[in-house]
Image 1 (cartoon, rainbow, N blue to C red):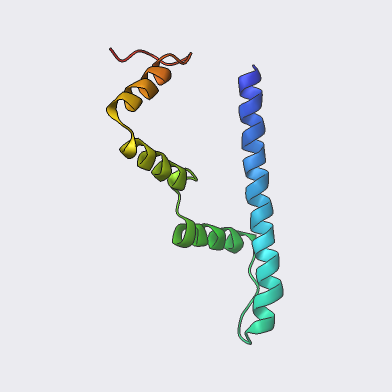
Image 2: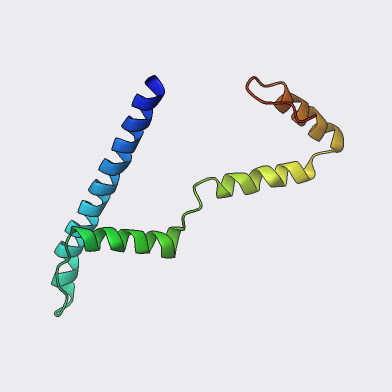
Length: 102
């Protein structure tokens, strides 16, 4: 029951966040762009969401936020000795909630 409430709460926060970001893009566009360019027109909420998605695709991608951290961890892994790697893997295996792959 708590899991469902938590998931519903997170989904609601995501929807609210998307709405707030779309509203912010729409407001900023309608405030700045028509004042700067003569033939520019205002946009509605749907166009603001489209602009937000387009900018995310062009400039941010949809790969998550772990990219830089993961590269740093792989660099650390590359400089470890085999003994250090084995010790780290043994620590991973002893964590609760992980299954044995043997």
